[in-house]
Image 1 (tube, one colour):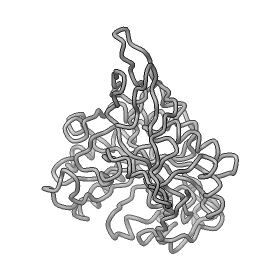
Image 2 (cartoon, rainbow, N blue to C red; image 1 turned 90 degrees about the vertical axis):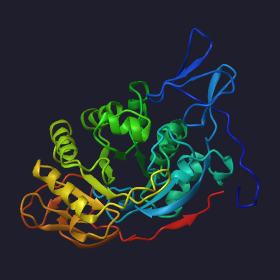
Image 3 (cartoon, one colour; image 1 turned 135 degrees about the vertical axis):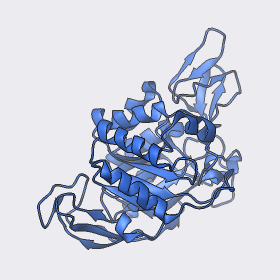
Image 4 (cartoon, one colour; image 1 turned 180 degrees about the vertical axis):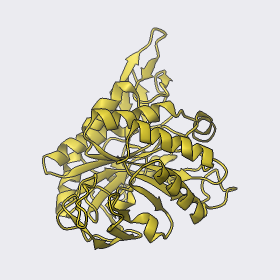
Amino acid sequence: MTATGTMIAESQHPGRWWTPLADGRIECRLCPRFCKLRDGQRGFCFVRKREGDAMVLTTYGRSSGFCIDPIEKKPLNHFHPGSSVLSFGTAGCNLGCRFCQNWDISKAREMDKLMDAASPAAIAHAAVRLGCRSVAFTYNDPVIFAEYALDVAEACRSWNVKTVAVTAGYITDDARAEFYSGMDAANVDLKGFTEEFYHRQCFGELAPVLETLRFLRHHTKVWFEITTLLIPGENDSDAELHRAADWIAENIGPDVPWHFTAFHPDFKMRDKPATPPATLTRARNIAMSKGLRYVYTGNVHDSNGGSTWCPGCSELLIERDWYVLGKWNLTGNRCVKCGFEIAGHFDAIPGKWGSRRVPVRLS
């Protein structure tokens, strides 16, 4: 529904990344599910649909709502800290995580969840008007609304507004390069580090996500950070954390920030307890023991684990209390004490958005 109470109709925006099959079906080539559709059928994500002999995106120009967030909430700790980001999502998802923390949006089948409408130009203009440094595609995975996200990104660039993809990285070789060509930054959700976990808990595969991480590191200039939601007894063992940290150190390098965040019982996984803060600290210590320089804890109150420390001299560089910045000991990208160059995008003066979350209407 819009602000005036009218329903936002499904879009019939032409979809991309699909191919016809010999048996009369069409195959979606956007994500590794490769959904094969007959006329009128929808993909696993629910928002990509076959109409006649083509694919359409039913959520183009339609949003579950807009909100101004701190950039640290994405989470991105090394991308213009303290700045505000205009955030929005649509509906649907191409994974089936039993522990989804945004299930009311990502698992939505009721199209009245899409309450706001906005063209790419309107979103870019709103970001400028609201003083947002960037626009984030979040709440559900932007891969499934890639056509809309890329058009928004193009509009934003003409206004010098950055774009951020908060994503599980579940995308094919066919679409990966073009999708990330529109992004300035990304947070990739590495949900676990075994195929068994991805298969059982996410109805997906690990390998395409690892390929996305390698691609971002070695073939793009996109600033990206990694997040892993630690679930007690599922993906938090020492052995799995050591394997994941070894892989990141070898394939991605020491400078990509890694966030360990606390699970809270939700959706179809209410039988698990919340993640103890000690688990996050243990994971952080394991990752740092492999030489990873910027490892963070999240979803808990932990100023030490949430702050940025200099790998050269251990100086406190950016103090964080939840999403509020405190001490700032950077000159440009360098530690004020020893001059060590810190990876990321930092402004001369940090932003002061703080922890505010402000819903806004665009339509």
